[in-house]
Image (cartoon, rainbow, N blue to C red; front, side, top):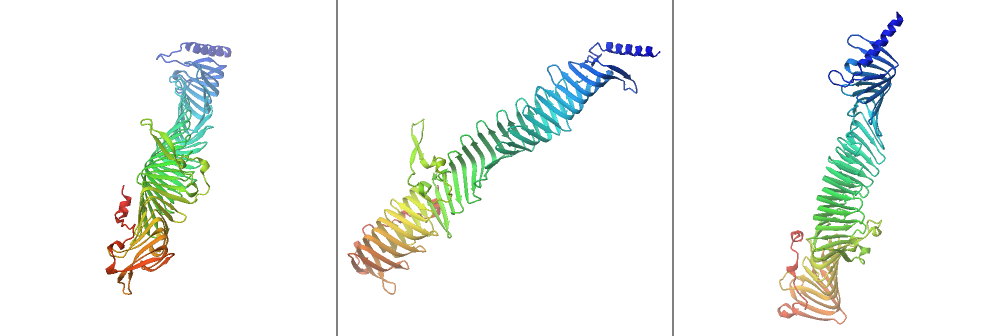
Length: 605
């Protein structure tokens, strides 16, 4: 009887295998085929009918090949549960392994649990639980997983993988590791074929030279380019760059930041804000456009402009459009249409209606000229114009200054080297206590000395001074000494329209206290006319004198004593006998029409 029962089971098993010889069920779906088992047991109970397959189980379905140690086969559901050492493979496709797999033939889907792994053309996805479609090569997990592709590893809590499109999706505690970069993100996608990473939420990208913080963007590791379309920050060794949009190409070196851009130089302590910035790492060229503002050395120097160009390699900087340069240490403000400078030489050139405002001891000095420049004193003798480029249209050559295009060999560790400010053409100065005009001008910050060249004229209270060249010494923005060189004339108003105290000579040195004249020394071809007063202060006559040298002492802005040295000559004219032709020296001329009238006149464009 026992032998008969065993034969019956074998016959039933054989019939079952024969029943599976058809690969399609009644609805036309491909059914799971049992190729080999060592032994088979059938179970039946409460609608949960299955066959238990034991030992060297081999199953095939729709070009899918599966092996395992044991399995439960639900024939009516076209489903199989495989246990221990489960391996699923497909011709020219992926291989999946796991401790447990539930495979549904109707949709080619495998639920994998325990050491689940998919290997597909050099890519490996490892997780504890995975739902994977063998046909579409789409898998997903939500309990943590790792994708390994050549040199890139991605781990996350949640992930999706598409073997055909090579597109992957990862969420929650995403970490991407690559020899060239690392990424930490809340959410991203990664295309294995194109090597493009799309950041969908807060992310940190670490490269060899920088750290990037962003909430969204695309990183193309194959082409070494990036576009961050959400507000992002890039930090490198020397700079921190923030913008609403950042793009960068490692191969070309080109970087662009757009929208409320902030650039902080952590070495120099400078800060740049703009609407847009461009920078090329290879060429060193950069540009900032729209509401450009630079804050250097924690507010010591500030610059605003409509546009800024700079080249890190050459040190060249060019600011354009309503440029404002503020130096809080020197208490100066520079206004101009264009400002160019060189980081290495510290040379600066301002053009297009430049104006300089300087504040000292409560008094403000306003100056304007056609051009202004700032140069280190040690470089004054080497500064010169050099050819720049040729305009192809009209074949004209433009020129620049050699110190604007100088290289890093001109750099100096001494940031506080004495500088000279030079102004050229139509120079005009105005303050409450002093006004001046000339054709060219220089100012040394270290000794507060002004040098005025080519027909300079200075007005101070009731005095007018002119000569071929004038050196003007100031202290706390107040006049302390004047050196008048060649064809010098100093005029002081007496308060009467036709009466002026006058001093002329080849060389005149005048000394002041609080802008009031105290002493004058005239050397060579000295001449003077001054109006003498009696003890009551009434004018009694005009004293005209000449000699090789004259010393004049003042009190309350009037001549108190005059000393003529070396071949003195002089004559005293009573007021009622003063000839008209003796009222003025030969080079006397009132030049009030040339005098700047207000700060508004200096500041106007």
